[in-house]
Each structure stands twice: as structure tokens, then as C-alpha cells.
Image 1 (cartoon, rainbow, N blue to C red):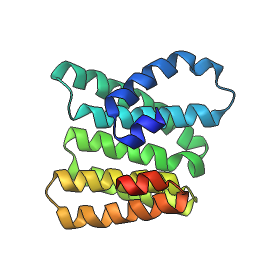
Image 2: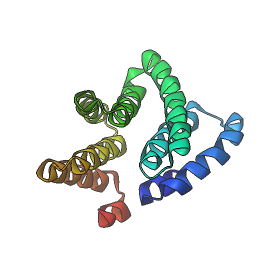
Image 3: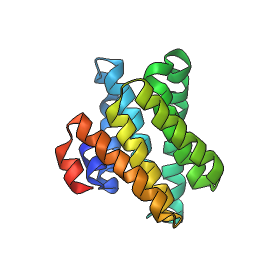
Image 4: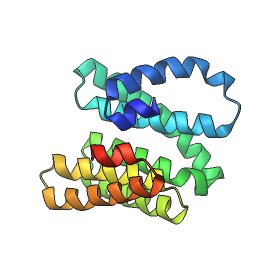
Length: 165
């Protein structure tokens, strides 16, 4: 699921998340469950763009479901989950057309990831923010976020993702 998400194949990432959800009970730690919820939420948010009306409702419901769980975990462990809940909040706000809220949550996600040393989450947050601004026609702002995403992916060691960007 994560590999498909990072490759930009959001339909395949959503499909993988549906299959993985059936096996989630076998997860041996909170790490797998947290990553599952985070990337599944982001995959549904990204797939929402190209979906039909009915599919959009399904994607949005799944996004909200994953976000609710991440939000609960963020209350108990903000260092690990604040970034994830902020980024999913940004994606929800983007889909709902609440642009100022989306901007705010992208910034919270980026700051939290940076402060807590999660280069990969900082990269994803910057990349999502770049896509958000690009879709709205703010090319210069989008380039800054994309450059920061690239730098974070490089710091994380994701050389293939750096080449993709």
C-alpha cells in the first residue's frame, strides 16, 4: 500500500488498503496499525480526485474513519500521531473546500513532523501541500513545497522518490 501510494498509483494503494484491512488483526505492533491508518487515509484522499460521485462518498467515509482513529491516538501520543492527524485533517479540509483550514493543517503537519524527526512524514506533508497549491494555480508556492518534499525524501534515503519528483 505504501509503495503504491509513493508511486502515485492511488487506485492500487486503495485496493491494497482494503486487502490489508482484512489482515490488520494480525499486526504485531501499533507501528503497523498506525502506518496502515495513515497511508490508507492518504490513499483514499488522493483517489477521491479521480473518483465518480458514488466512489467519492466511499473514499471520504474511509478517510474520515481512518482520521478518527488517528485523532484518538494523537490525544494519547502526540509525538507519534500529531503529524498524521494534522495531514489527514488537511486532506479532509481540502476535499470539503475549507482552504484556509487545509493550509493551516498542512503547516501543522510539516512542523510536527520536523519537530519530531519524521523526515518521511515531513516529505509526504510537503508533497501533499505542493499538490494542494498546484491544483489551486499557485505554482510558485507549490514549487517551494515540492523542493522541501524532495529534500526530506533525500534525507530519508528515498532516492527513487527523489528521482520521481
